[in-house]
Image (cartoon, rainbow, N blue to C red):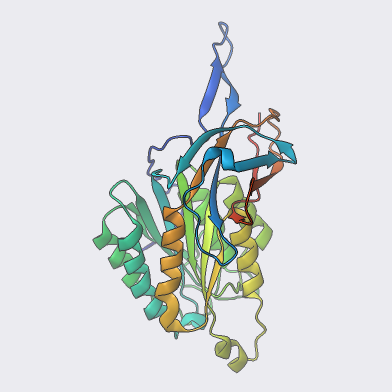
Length: 324
């Protein structure tokens, strides 16, 4: 078990359409080769009003806009076979004491259901610090072992400083730091579908990073966040503590194209993982070349609609343009 550091080795996986270069100009002698066009990938899940997944749409069924300007969908895949790179981020703070064991068992079952030989997963946990328990691997035995290593921390100051030392106010739930580090050091340089699964109630205490910084890091790394929210409200009531974690999880998940699945009964945890697995198997991949070619690093809003039918489209709400 070790802390995440900036020297963390990143495993690269190959996948199509990943912000790929579409067209280049050969440089004159002494000049630098410059990318003139890039592809932006948008992964979308389409549902009927009753929540049932819609798996059989075609490219012409979709409308896509960037900052309200129509875009041409150049690449399209249904039930995408794009490799999946996934991080499992587990809350081991005291508020999860009654639910952690069930989360661990269902997380292992989920990985067996979702991972294929070309997919990779990693396991991290957070409480007073953020630690990487298993680097990216397709070996389910190693992933199971890492998940089993999660135990509840008693709170207080950690024995050794992590990459983000505990703040002056203390706090045993460094969720935002965990998302920030997962985005910047684990998933940023990966290619293809990148998903971060949060097992937490969403309450943050003691992170150095703020919610907005964690979200921006995930957006800049093109990560989809799914949250399995098992909230033990009796824990907060018993400790006379306020709770607002559910709103933070909605912001993190919905802005990146995922969603929050709140588990009201611990025994329903498996059903929550099942929903995530089904959505990952029925995503659409829409790739387009932005009409706005400025390399200004600005945030650009994306909107995806289905031309006909009363459908809900679940996708990320925007991305950060590259900087020139």
